[in-house]
Figure 1 (cartoon, rainbow, N blue to C red):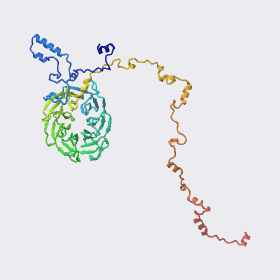
Figure 2 (figure 1 turned 120 degrees about the vertical axis):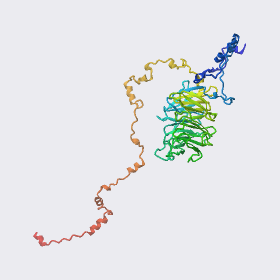
Figure 3 (figure 1 turned 90 degrees about the vertical axis):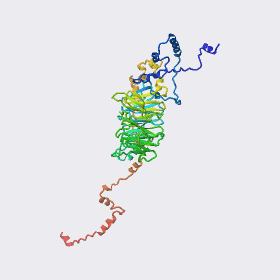
Figure 4 (figure 1 turned 90 degrees about the horizontal axis):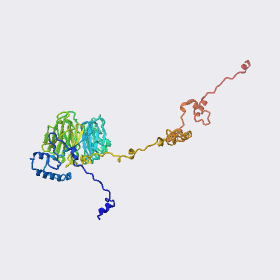
Length: 579
């Protein structure tokens, strides 16, 4: 008898608890597949059996051949679908347009107005978004369900628009830049850690203020130091801050303009990938670069009129090698600059509609393409996401989205493109084959299971019936039920049950003073000087008959000596007799 039969006869099916493996639906990504306008939808996944197009083109064949094809299709049908895995180290021989992760999309809809700030953490697990509806929202791919709602929403600065959000390189904190003059620091869970100081607006010299005195437009983290970041403001300065010191900045870079007044708004700032240079773009169309090892008195590289004067430059991005600078201007242009020849742009594209001043452009992870958004031609129309070649800025691929793309981010680790639109939506573009995690995590979860009776607690499934007087508040005469008069009087005398306040202290220490202070001791022993209230003559005369005439002898004795003796005429006897 086989061992398995023996175990089955004994009622033992195996040793240990066998976990039921979750089977993923092969067609789970089809729900989020993009439908291209004016183009037939072509499914990249293999379909078992002949396609409909081949059936139309194929001529009718003999019945025997059809039967044979049907048998072959029936044999192939039961084969399970194996999802292709993406190997980042595998190099493809042919470069195709389909390499862009744009075949599928996931819509995150919770904002009500244009997305003006967007950032992904370094791991690609969380998105932080800011909008003109004054809200900042945190999204977590691993914690979201199919409803796609943020796990935290708050207003960082009241009724001020959000201009920029940047995650630090360690992913543990991020900066939020609003229309105020103070930057705010949050941890990755959205808890506020610091609000940096505001400068004195009445000081003319910007180097002498502890912080910005006007609204901040942009910020950037140091690529190698997670404790240092910079901010660019409308007060014509770029300030270098330390995360640990929110009371004052480390260094101030005062940007001087060629225009009258020598001040201009700094609308964008950036670090080079090695952290050796700081770049700033101004409202007067100038671009400036400073060496971080210099004293920041004047820029090391500068070009006037890089973009149209008065147009807000949306973003400045350096390439991976740090030699190429990409700028997206509010004058409908995208320009590439080489730092080794900074006088003229390498290439320029001037037909990209810009409807929002903070529209940005980014490099692809392989540093071969540029991605940016183009505004809708009509109000409420569809916008375009443009993939441009880095060499000549020619359009390689054009993708239509629901509204104007404003913020674009292409994460290199998860290979997904996150786009913030003007209608408040966040569009996450991905590919099931070339993307990792991110939006794919939501599709792997599947729909939530319906709640059954077994899932509910015993209190909800079978509620306990309680009689009113069985509750603690009705026991032992407490609460509404009346007790005996003697018990109430006894409880009244108990200070704990009657909640009687503490009696005032009597005796030593009354009024909170336990002992007399040194000052009180000195004051009590002082003798009051009453000489001011006495008559000086009486004060002297009271010592006149004293045994010790030290006070009066000097004046009374000489007076007595100097007084003349009275001499009277003696009376005659005759007159006495007459009288």
